[in-house]
Every structure is written in structure tokens, then in C-alpha cells.
Image (cartoon, rainbow, N blue to C red; front, side):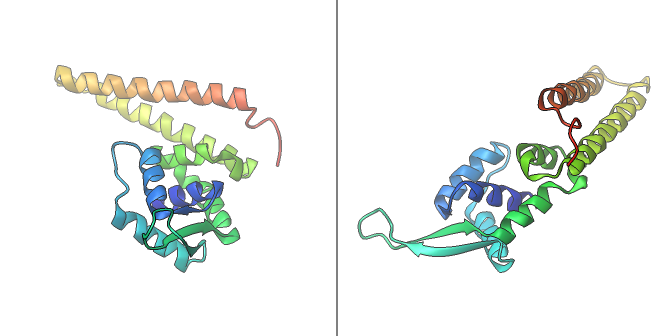
Length: 175
């Protein structure tokens, strides 16, 4: 569902043609993963079938080029996006959790609190798991370095969430 979330989020701003969507999706997803043509157009097709987006043809700005297809989010698409980013299971996956955070305004306050609580629980269980791994005596220097680094990352994310909650006033106001 990450593909659908990214495409719908990009279409929130304004309608876009496929090539522009692909460029923006690549920037959004980052260098670890590309949003190739097949992936983009299969996602667009699924979203059109679900009536989350509509498309229309418009003239190309390039002289003599064929018309291009422009995609636009529908009210059903906005609702689908809200559902996708509000899924409490997003807290268990780093990329999905950060996508939810980036679209925080779409998420009801009670779900925001649930996402944060579940993320904190997941982070605590990760620290516990890494602590158990670190207790084994026969680590190589490299494996110990990896465990230490991961423990640092999880602890840093917890501190970052604390600061973010305080800064944004999350949890201070009811729905």
C-alpha cells in the first residue's frame, strides 16, 4: 500500500501527468527504491479501478507530441488516503510510519495517539530484543557494532518522538 499512499499524497496538491508523478515519487521514496514506469502505471490503474483517481487527456506542451494523461484525486481517493495513513499497523513499519507522520493532518487525533503508542511499544520491544542479542558472549566486533548502532537508532527515534510530540502538542487536545 506504500505505492498507493505515495501516489495519492502527490495528487493531493494538484493533478499531475504520469511522468511528473514518477519524478516526484522517486524524490519522495528516495534513492533506495525506484518508482519505475511499470510500478507507477499499475498503481495508477488500481487507483482508477477503485475510483480513487480519475484521468483525462490534455494537450502536450511539446509541439506535435501526443496528448498526455493527467491524473486527479477524487473524494474517494482522499478518504482512501486517510484510511491508508491511519492504519495502526503503520507503526510497525518504519517507512509506513514516516509516511503517516508526513500526512499527520489527515489522521484523526485518536488514531494519531494510537499510532504513536504502538510505535513506542514496537521501539521498546526492539530495544529489548537487541539487549537480548547483545547478551550473547560470542559476538564479532562487527556484529557488536551493528547491535550497538541499532540500539542507538531506536533510542534516538524515541527521543525524537518525545520532542515531536511536545513541539506539536500531540495528545494535548481531544478530537
